[in-house]
Amino acid sequence: MKKYRASGRVPLVGLIAMLLGTIIASLVVGGLAFAVSHLIYLIVFFSLIMGFIGGGILAWAVRRGKVRSPILAGLFGLIMGLGIIGTVHFLDYYITDRNDYREVVYGKSAQNVSQEQVDKDMNDFLMEQTGSTGFIGDLKFNASRGMTITPTSPSGGSNMDLDEKGTVIYWSIELLAVALICAGLGFAAARQPFNEEADEWYPVPRYVGRADWKSRKDFYKLLKSGDVNGAFKMVNNAPNNGNRVDVVAQYTPSVPQSDVIVTIKETRVNRRRRQTSATKMRGVLSTQEFNDLVRMVSGTQTAQSSVVQFSGAGGSLE
Image 1 (cartoon, rainbow, N blue to C red):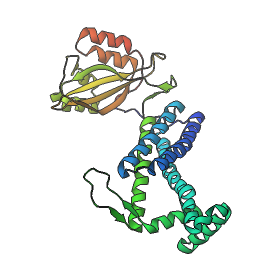
Image 2: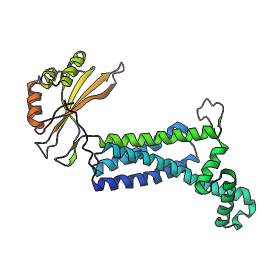
Image 3: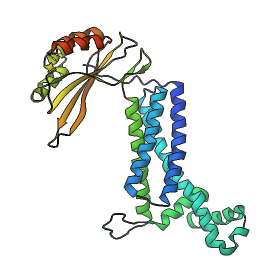
Image 4: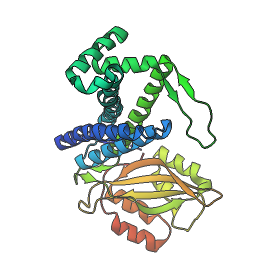
């Protein structure tokens, strides 16, 4: 059965929202990371924070702008990651390194030297050392000096000194981590079900029923072979606090004849009674198809109320 696919549409307002979100996140998140890094810098934790904050901003822009192109949203996420890390390094050059150069080279007379003269002398130095000037030259020079990673755990440990190659590798990994997190969150946001007829995102899923955990393989086989009727005969409303296969649906009340999104989720319960869910399938059903299927669900009272709630759709299940 055909699965749900994002339409790939990108309204102009959505494109503008992603562009503004990328610029704002790059400057704000990068600026905050630069400021905090002068107090403390946790090598893994910082990358995760930058990625999730930036990705959260992008996901918000995708939702507000009604962007339905996961690929384009992911591309903006990659650009955002580059912008965040680039802002951190640029501020390090523009604020820290230029001031350090002034203090080291001119010493007590630093206050009497103009910034233009400092920049000129610094560029001459960077050109001699790296073959480049300005931000790029400073980036190359910092890489050539290497870096030291200091353990922050209570148990302590020895410092890790990185040479030029190790520093470049570390910077690359940091950039890749931030960019992939931003891209992943943007991609996931644009991939969420969108009702093209109603021109809005589908609301949160509503519970329909569940299939027996031990029979889940047969349930999946029926769905994948196209026997939706046979599959839904295995769905019921019996209470179950253990492992199960949940069936949920999303519909838009403002457009009652639009498609219904049906999602199949596996819910597992560990020994500590904590639940984790993972989506196994997602597809589309028409109003009539879905209402017919819901009537098959055992538990008459719940099934009848579901038929009233889910009156809208056209399509098939993945």
